[in-house]
Amino acid sequence: MERLIEILEELNPDVDYKTCEDLVDGRHLDSLTILSLISEIEDEFDVEIPTVEIIPANFNSAKSIMALIEKLQEE
Amino acid sequence: MSFFDLGFAFLFVPIVVLIFIIVPKKVKPLVLLLASYILFFIASKFLIIFLLLSTLSIFIAGKKLNKIDELKTKALEKKDIDKKEIKEKFKKKKRRIVLLVILFNIIFLFIFKYLKFFTININSLLDIFKIDYNFTIIKLVAPIGISYYTLKAISYVVDVYNGKIEADNNFVRLALYLSFFPQILEGPISKYDEVADNIYNATKVTYHNFCFGYQRILFGFFKKLIIVDRLNILVKQVFNNYTSFNGLSIFIGIVSYTMLLYMEFSGTMDVVIGTGEIFGITIPENFRQPFFSKNITDFWSRWHISLGHFFKDYVFYPVSLSKPLKKITTSLRKKFSVRTSSLVAGGIALFCVWFLNGLWHGAGYTYLFFGMYHFLLIFMGNIFEPIIQSICTRLKISRTSKKYYSLQIIKTSILVFIGEMFFRADSVSQGFSMLGRMFTRLFVLSKNEFYRFGLDFYDVILIIVGLLIVLFIGILKEKNISVREEIAKKHVVVRWLIYYLLILSIIILGAYGNSYAPVDPIYADF
Image (cartoon, rainbow over all chains, first blue to last red; front, side, top):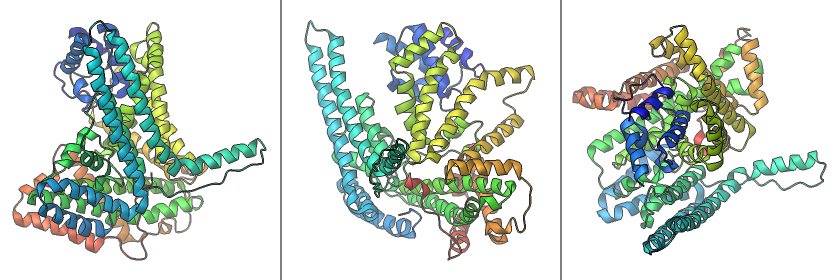
């Protein structure tokens, strides 16, 4: 989780990722930032994020992103 | 056909509501489907066959995709098999079906919408190469809403392919999703999982929903009859005679056109969403106060939201995360930062999105220019974002301050006005010519400059008051305050006073008569 928050802070430092629950709906992460985030996550956590998983519910908080990573690691 | 024809909101809808209430629960979806097909038939006659073909194509495709999934599950149950190979084999089969169905639907869209444009361009090319042959130019009348229901059909099959939704075995539910009458003319292009069950399972018309629905419809009429049909006079004058106006007047003309477009499209959405609301159906919003946007990316997440979502989900991410582009991103990551390395893949995907967005709006160079203009603005915005961020940090400018936000809103709005000017212009060169006049002849006053707008003092006051009311409601919405909920809390006398004022203002102050030129539904032509 800490590594994920570090990645997110590198991309956009203006957000408190421990509490923010509307990263996509609140437009803190735009499409290009999400693209960078996916590339970084895939590298760091050795997973492949399919496009069908790129939905606001999976990217609205650091917690939901981590849950997605864990789900993909299990598959 | 327009949803602002009184016959739609005050005859067609009440009749459907009445029948919907009377019939047994099981028949209700059929009533909605029949109403949808009747409306389609009234507008497009036998071209309804294309809507039926689209519906049938995605219904069959969904069933086929389901069958393949079942066969895959059975195949995977066997022992001593290469699971990866089997999965890949079935994926290929599914992909073939999806591509075929997309192609089938796109061909109709191409024939009806783009054939003329392409024939003209091919003929021009033949002329350039001095080939003495010209194709006959055929201009066909398209079925209503083809640009909208085709995208809905594509989104359905792709979502089934991706396993995001289950294929629908109920033909009525799927047909209703594709053709639900409030959404058929101008969208929104909602996804299957957002609305299909909601529409199919609608059972009641409650007093609350009926009142709230008609309030929303009336607000749409207010925008159209008080603001749009008046602004249209000014817009026509300026765009048709721009060479005789000074820069300031042209600027007023392009601001008016953007407002006209917003009021017309969002007003139609009020009628659409309000009609859904009557039946207890929640149709997703297509606008969210776009003129409070801090940049162009933000603007497009607030304006025609459903189209933006379509392009993001079915073009931007699939293209930018495709294998070849992912390879490029990975190799760039070795030399550059995460954000910079994503710019190439993101930029290519963004280009595809905006090329298609321009083309979706119409077959013409002004629309393609409109798309490329936004591509450049968004792409440049992404490139310069880190630079702006570091400048603000150095100069200690707070990017979250109200002042900074206000400046962002003004900048974004001006960029939007210019984009819409090219969108409305007859040609790209007219757009540039108008832009040039805005800079070179800003205050060069000619005789009767403003009188030539074609509006009298009374019209101008009504437009301004109308826009201020919409702005006021927008500010409240931006603060998450629901105006209708607030009105509903008021005393019954105050409440009905507001409703009567709204109805009377539309009846008395609406732009009726020969001196006005009612605007045809702009987005229905896209």
